[in-house]
Image (tube, rainbow, N blue to C red; front, side, top):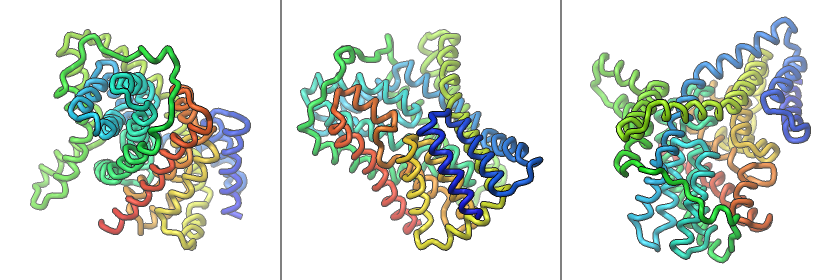
Length: 437
């Protein structure tokens, strides 16, 4: 009965979002209430479970996600993102331009939330296509696959950041492993796959042809790269340093403090304000104004994360965690494949990678808590599954189709296959990494 209650709750969540078109936060709360009743949880404890689940999930994430959104907005508004793209593209010849675009998408995708990065990069892709004479879709796929991989695998993006907290993983190691898995996945799903799309003709919106986001006085390439990659350097650097032998307690304390994700994002934000704003003569009020708008943009994601926390806590308080651990542990699938498969199924049903990742994580959390699987790798496996099989219920599918003027068939052939390759090879390389470590 316990497993059936979980399945009914997840099915209800899918119906409420995909058929009834309710906001995911509301759908999560309704599914959580249904789960609590089906699991026989005492009525006077249900509200407390919902409140605790929301608080526990948001408590560790709100600061990171808000700071990350503000940081990414400054990267975009200052022109640093475009400077990074121009520098990488200018450093290679015409024959290696897809590699430069893939690297641009990956690097720019770290600080920028996905939709912001997508909208920002499309005019750049069209500009490069116009200047180089190369097919537009052939150039778009490498860059957008880089954005997608950063969105699914790397903190501080919402889903991987939430999963790190849920599984009690390490943000630094998740970032390092995500880069190890993400780079070869990017090469396959980006430049290599793009070769098969040279004959596809894009018909972009005419209004976009001459539109390119250009800052009046963009920062230098050095400042742009330094600021954009600062969170990666701080998280990975402190994690690697903590692994060294012979550190004094004081050194470990400072490294632990410096590697805390909230501290990392705060330092990165302040560096962006100073290096990309104040030092270049931009009024502080103007820089802060864009940051305020970025926080507004993240509100919807925070609500989704909060709803997922409520459903997870009901599963725990209703005793479903132990039942799920026993049931999932008895399946013949490896845990990483199981997490990937659950995320894929929910992604196909709902379209949202963030919701798919969070829902799947709530189901497999008991397996991770019981040990036997690296929590950092489970973040990556679920992230890969959450990107699988993008189709007509995914906003990214329609953005790609409309921006580049493709038919449905062409969008399936390009965008959907690219996302599926990211999901498949993301899992494959995660499994390979699990054997190595």
